[in-house]
Amino acid sequence: MAEKTKIITSIGGQALMEGIMMRGPKITSVGVRLPNGEIDVSERPTENLRDRWPILGLPIIRGVASMIDSMRIGYQALNESAEKSIEGLEDEEEPSKFEQWLDRVFGEKIMNVVMGIAAVLGIALAILLFFVLPTWLVNLMKMGAGEGIEAWRSLIEGVMRIAIFIGYVALCGLQPDMRRTFQYHGAEHKTIFCYENNEELTVENVRHHGRFHPRCGTSFMVLMLGLGIVIGFFIPFTNPFLRTAVKLLCIPIVMGLGYELIRLCGRHDNWITRIIAAPGLWVQRITTKEPDDKMIEVAIAAMEKVIPENGEDRIVP
Image 1: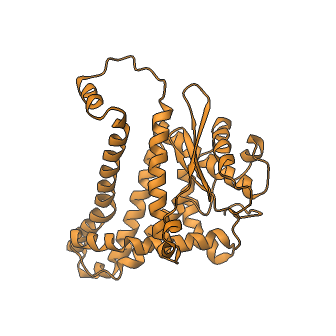
Image 2 (image 1 turned 60 degrees about the horizontal axis):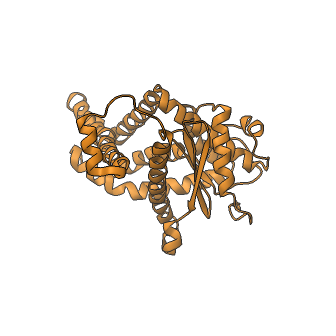
Image 3 (image 1 turned 45 degrees about the vertical axis):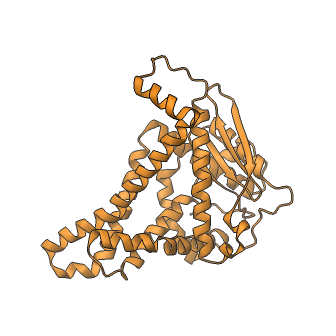
């Protein structure tokens, strides 16, 4: 069960490489622990698609717009943290000819190029693992079990996708660098909880709060996977590539519905919202870890920059 709070804030965040991004109504900050031990916090205005085009604030549509904003801002923040987290570190080895060529061709933009390639490969791998593979495996099962399995296709595919997702994040958590990122994720949640309980943002106050938050991106992903099962029952195609194409076209609908459910769970606490939020909170046991005090310090530094003086981040249920 998620921790109860005195207020609800619209401020959200994202764990980065050795840092945290906090996104407020007017300001977005990126806090990074530098190699020399200091905390660097940068600020920029928060730019939302809904501010530019009010129609994107309508129910369902706002979920898609919010996801696009989160991906765009999150990518920029991740790129910034990756550069700053290795700033000043000297490489004792002589750069290879390939590295020298990359530096000549791309110069200071090399990190953007690397992150861009990683993003493209990540999307391609996600489509293969979460869409093509489950459909192909169910087709194989159908050859052995017969037509009777067809009625359960969407459920079986959905369970496979959830298993792949949980297995993937669990394996990521075994890597030391990713485990630290999961710890920063926990620091982000604890700091937001501390603020939502009207407590002073100190390491001591933040430390005792919970790390499972109902409005977390992990919960959003789990909800999308669950909604994908429901949508899948209405897709008649069995060809892996055709079925994948239709599912990709349905992603905006799933995003919109998932956003509205997350929004509902974040604003109301009753037995219905607790049931909806429970799977996502459980998976957060994997995607968040207990942070150390230095990580909490970074989260506090980032959080303090985005809190508005007029309280416009406060959400009325």
